[in-house]
Image (cartoon, rainbow, N blue to C red):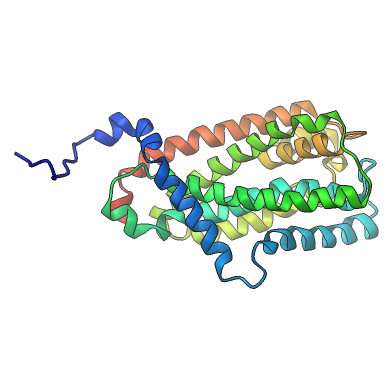
Length: 275
């Protein structure tokens, strides 16, 4: 018998009501995301400008190396604009993966003390990185104005590619945050993936330089299709999407998201025991 002030936790409750609980605990999701945003910028000297400085400096380096020294093509757009159009989704993906991978370990005390859908934690980290993405987008607008480069009608398709980038970031983030709880060595793997991925993704160069016979294989990198999509929407003009490769990247993103949710849910019940 329990009184009205006693909290009763039923066995299997989380399985029966998990997806409904995601909505019931939405205020916790808002709180965690807002807390991460405040913590990220509260004690920094220049605050949110960091979200612009990092991709801007990377853009400058890639423009000098690939645009001026290597003389690689830029699809008819100013080279800095071409690079920054790719930096937006890549920086978002890299930040989301880094933040989400350590999110459960960073909230170990909360996980071990109270029930809520654990999916809220990595999802909040991805949304925090999305705020950086929106801030960085202001720099892209400034570059477009500076170079007097006006996007065409394709810009209307940009929200679709943003959703694909969100799906890629969430899928990868769920995999690595779950693996990091069980295997702490993965905290060293993520920075390597982020650094290595920057150079094998078409960020500093156009994917058009990849020989067509290798384009489908190259598109096994899910961010290749995402970046190409961003450039197609923002730059317009001569920029084309290699459809087989893009569909391959889209399929990989879908598999990554579905399998990430599946693996996260499979291991979620053990988080409080091993964290």
